[in-house]
Length: 232
Length: 251
Image (tube, rainbow over all chains, first blue to last red):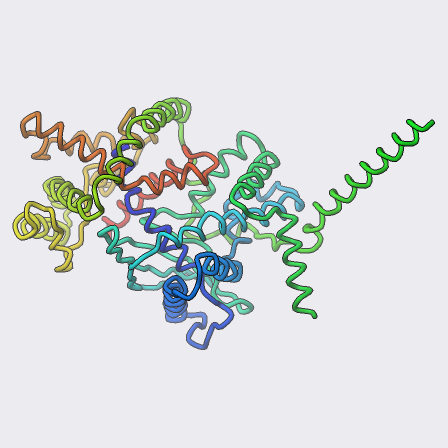
């Protein structure tokens, strides 16, 4: 436990911040956020500012903040890619039906796991240290979180991907060297290896329900409703 | 006749409901077929299942379960009590003082790693925080840009190319590797607190364990709530973090 504490010490702060940086309105991506190192920097900077503004908006209730952040999460986080990366070798053998259900549930799982953590947020600041072009449209942005609450600085890396249709999207967050998706690959993979993919998807569904999230079917229904609203 | 008719109606009703539910469950498949990601798209810094090597897993899981029970009924309640009783300001002072006491170990390992900047940083941090910072209670050095960067002998061995060896979970102490476990033993040699009188050693150790556990209460609660296999999550996190420390030291 003592050794464990050495590396997990600041992870909770990392997660709170990491998620906060995940969420901002990409729809308004501007000219400063082109496919370049400076574009990646500007993107992280903009969403950081947006999140600080939303979380600090006293006119919004906690539920209102969560709802706004949830919508932004839907637009920003590339859970389709993340979910398949996490499956690893199982992504080769999973059926199309199971994959679709899993990805819908994973999106809800990630959202429900992290959005509520905003309630813990208060009074932190950040510095963007550097950004790197990793090739194939991938960028890495290193950010230092300064937490007065925990009396510490925490290093968080954002892995972004750029595509012409969406602009930048977020594919991973790495806190103190610990990658969200690599950790989840081990976590999910252990159960899939023991019990099989179908069993895992059922447990994922149970967990999402226990978090108050939507089932895979409901996710689709919601999307259908939104599409219908737009058409009307 | 009547019973048969009711039975048929019920059977038909159930059958219809099942069909409807089945159709509903399959809807999402046709409406939002996900973009299938090929493995080429994963080619970057991530290795395939890089952290899944665990030859001692059977043994480790037994020890993990033992530690979990110990934590659930002893360590975690004590840490929560500490959090409830001692205000955040006080806990931060305790944490600072404990960190300050690890400076000699970090100093020696920075020297062994040939890290001149790291060595100087640890030296000045210890000097400033022990004096102006009142015995390390206040981390004044950070205000001067001298951020804490702890080093240990496991990391030093990693810097010189020694592989981690198998992942291992130790009773009470928790996750480590063969390399890092040996490193912790070596670090005791040049840790001055290990040579103090026994009352100090025991007190220091107990406070350190409680403070360390309190620091990670939120994250362990999070793992327990959200993880499907906490053992695997902790193993992966530990190995990634250690690798990061070694990679950072190289730079």
